[in-house]
Image 1 (cartoon, rainbow, N blue to C red):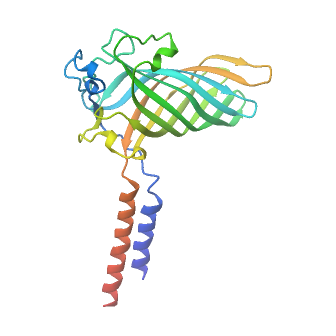
Image 2: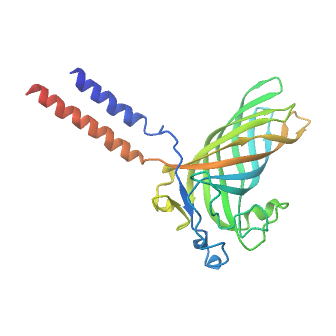
Image 3: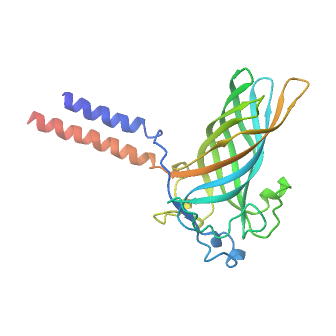
Length: 270
């Protein structure tokens, strides 16, 4: 009976923990030539990048913090590079954060929301809860780093749905950190592949996790007459993705363990 109970506990554990799967980076590559028929040529090579593990980026955020401690962020960013799975430079097919490159990937958001959890002296601590970041590929040179409106001019690539994260900032020194976590809610067909050649667009959205983390450098702060704040920050940060098992996989595993428990029980009786 003790053995049976042990099997049942293990099965329940797997079922209960299916939504808390540890984040393990997935290696991946892009086929940027598939984004648009206008992009069939003009790449460094064939339009297919090396196997990568992370993306670096630069971003600017405007945070509105009301007197109730509610935070609403908006901002823009641009990918500055890609890190190969083995730490080498790798082939990024001419990706650049300037017009000198073959293409740029930019992104923008206006609805990332959160709440101030605590303030100790000049140190503010907050957490994020919801929001969406949209990403675009620009190859026609319309992108202008100085014009935020051009960050959404390219071809729509994918979206990141924010589900959580943390924010810290010292209002005196201007130093801080932040993290975001969520899942890829949409990705264009035939663009983003895992190292096993699985097209991410063929997977369920919630199985593609994405995290970001980096510095939070205060560039400017304005205190409004009502006491609310407008904080402008810049970030040098990175994105990583992980393809996690479908919840159904854990359910089947849990049921299998329970089934084994039943078999074990019958053997004990016989």
